[in-house]
Length: 128
Image (cartoon, rainbow, N blue to C red; front, side):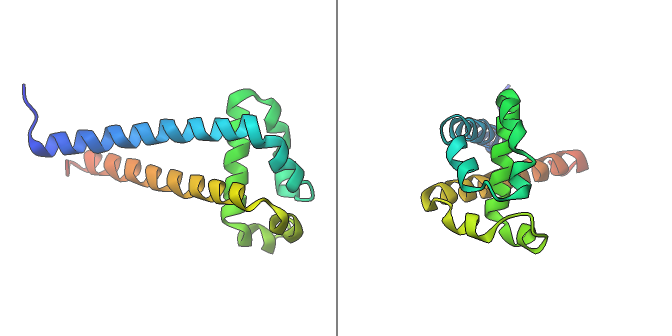
């Protein structure tokens, strides 16, 4: 059985998306195990982070959730600043290279999930 060009392209997109999500998890876990103390030290005055800080003792899943939460907060700080859940001083003093990595991680997972959701919706609707 041979696949058509369309089927091959769709399969390639799905596999690349799945590989991207697995790579994203690996990068997040690497950051969690190597930079967690640095991230928490720079965000020690942020209630939104400190309420999530016990997740660091929750194994790989907890560390993944904590890095995801920190990257969301660093990427979209206005939402948390309005509610007083993060300190603007802590955010300003956060290391630039690490902040850029977290922002890139957040936007990449948003894009990967959008591709996966749109792919699933297209399959479910019978479009593909």
